Image 1 (tube, helix red, strand yellow):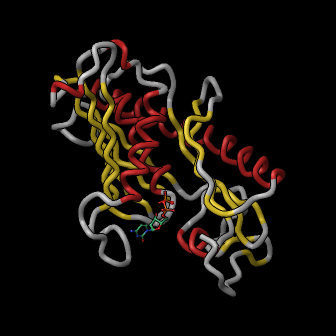
Image 2 (cartoon, rainbow, N blue to C red; image 1 turned 90 degrees about the vertical axis):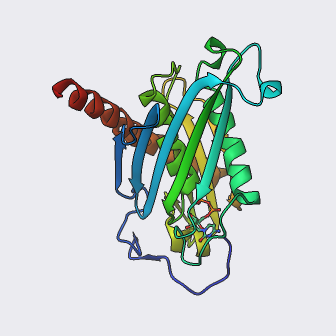
Image 3 (spheres, rainbow, N blue to C red; image 1 turned 45 degrees about the vertical axis):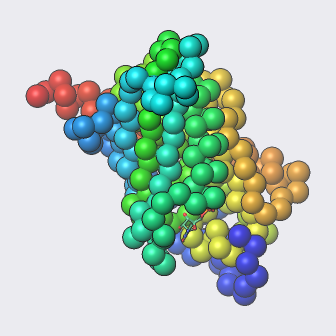
Length: 242
Ligand code: CDP
């Protein structure tokens, strides 16, 4: 973000990948793709490919981390070494620890953890291919995987980013836009209450631009939510026909 360059990211009102300012990249979501997880989801979002697996609720280990009032939700965002242009050094780094923390906090707002005291729920998200916007793609997939696991949830978490490139507010930045743009604002929205459960901002926006970006992301989250719902419905249709 904010890397100075002479790259023109918008030409004749279109972005370099042909999208209009308020257009999402193509998204496909499939629920229930892993036999050994309690819930799972595979999601492609533009050039992002992510796999989410949920295990639990199960006994909380180590015991001293358990909570007598609710389940502990662990979220691990992990980038595969081959997911980016330069090999990503395996294992957690500051960035993935941060993403995991804020994503867990977003999901804690919807999963009815108080129904499962002393247990834990593990949410693993593997980024197989990254092309900007992976934290949003990961959280959107994780939410489907949690629903697929049958965990009671009060709402769905849907994450979409908006930002600014060449002075224009746009939806869902791709890699070049993320690298050479002026701002990126990942957001996660609860569809029914409208609550924002994740909000970050990299770069600078005026108040007016921020409002525009937030409105754009919230509007787009409704489309992504429909895809999440359709993925879950498809899974149960398939299961029913077996
Ligand atoms: O992926 P997201 O936009 O949520 O997070 P970011 O930190 O803004 O990273 C933007 C993009 O930079 C990622 O999606 C990757 O495509 C790329 N990246 C990378 O190439 N190598 C890394 N170690 C981290 C990120």
